[in-house]
Length: 143
Image 1 (cartoon, rainbow, N blue to C red):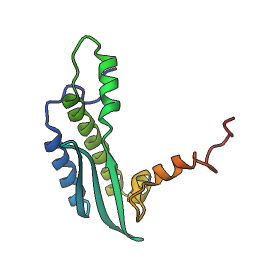
Image 2: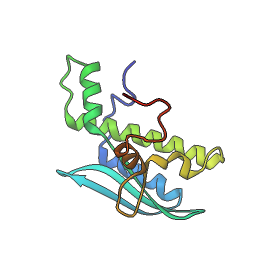
Image 3: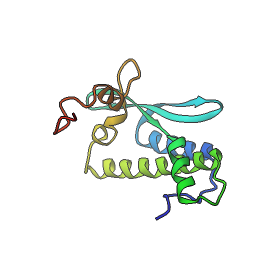
Image 4: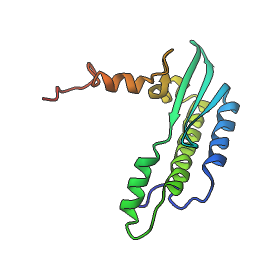
């Protein structure tokens, strides 16, 4: 099966704007685009929750998408620009689905965005747990 949104021609900047619009409608009051070499690599946002303001960072892993596209379409010349468009469309779809779950009350915002929550140093919960090798969460010790 081909990767979701593999054929998109919608620019990454347009998709990022769509994500920002969805987050703003969901209550985000600060939204930031993070750039590297002129490309958007993450969208961060702050939103008020029942526990106070929380910050989240949603990264787009363009390199991972590029690898999958090149594997699935070995005869084509998949470029970084295309992978960037696909990565952001996938992230947009995921964000929309999470916001729909929140809107229906099936989950809380903190539940679905939990891996992306940032501490006051800008480190996400996922990054912190990965650095600790998920100590205390793995059901079996890896030897």
